[in-house]
Image (cartoon, rainbow, N blue to C red; front, side, top):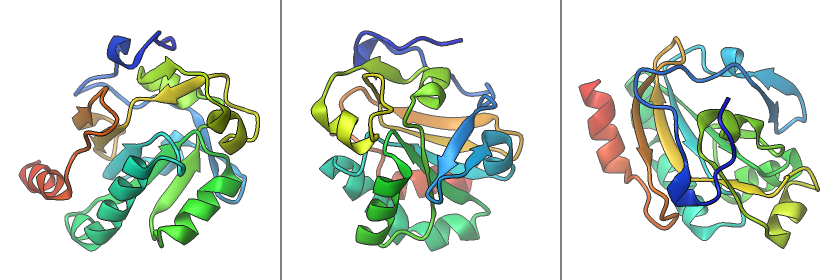
Length: 175
């Protein structure tokens, strides 16, 4: 089991060929759903810091802009953050997102992925509605096959650097 790293540069993420662990996430409707159910088809998984992060919102909107192309290539888009379901709904509405968002407020999923690091911030307390134990995920993009196996990943400890949509589409076309 992975641990929460001391900093974004110290994470030990799962790598290509490894499987996304079985874990429960919370839907925008406040229902527990297992990752085995969510990731049972080819998926572009975006793990982001929260709806309060302008870099995250830009990335989510860029994914929305290319969603139809991603779907045409046989993938679904799923995004996960420490935000509570209430704030996920707000992000979905404000950014006009069609794809699914899930909550990992307690950090167990990010920790299992090996991308969680310690971070104390008042925003985390507010946006997780008190469930965040003091962590953030390093923003990441995973491409998964229908068996939850990682076929591609992009992780950068510098939260301002994100995978661009055109590069993601090129990757999906080549997998």
